[in-house]
Length: 90
Length: 90
Image (tube, rainbow over all chains, first blue to last red; front, side):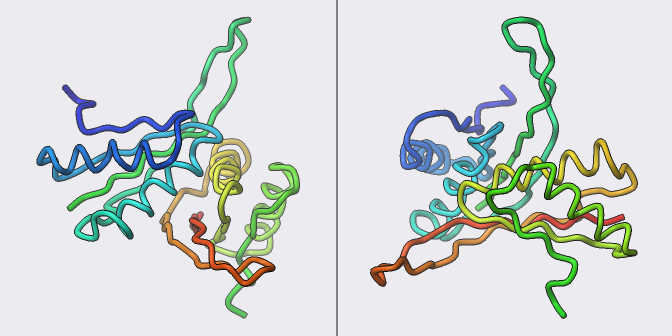
């Protein structure tokens, strides 16, 4: 599955996502991708920074990509939302 | 001056910063650096995405760096804050 080493950032606490990233590394993944949209982007950067500085210094930011996604709201209107993908690699 | 092609993201509207970035490119800069801390990071990504998709398709994201900065609050306590630097290049 393509998304098995991916952590999607939502409304939970930052540390919950740090823990999710660490679980992936502890399961043997060499790369973990942190994805977020809109306001969660700031939290995604926090998760990457906290993971590599405090929990897993072996990891580093391998790549960061940004994109614009078109999302449809309930009324069918299209909204542009920025997204980010941060790849942490050991 | 090192910071002359840099736009710092703060509390103004997203489009104000897009305009600031465009001004730099119109002044002949080949690279414009968009910097933000904490919650403004999401807005920085919006500014980069809107600039390159809607205003200046010649520009592309050249580099994105994240960092942890130690900031002191008024009481002298140290807080860790994530920051981002997005380099747009023509």
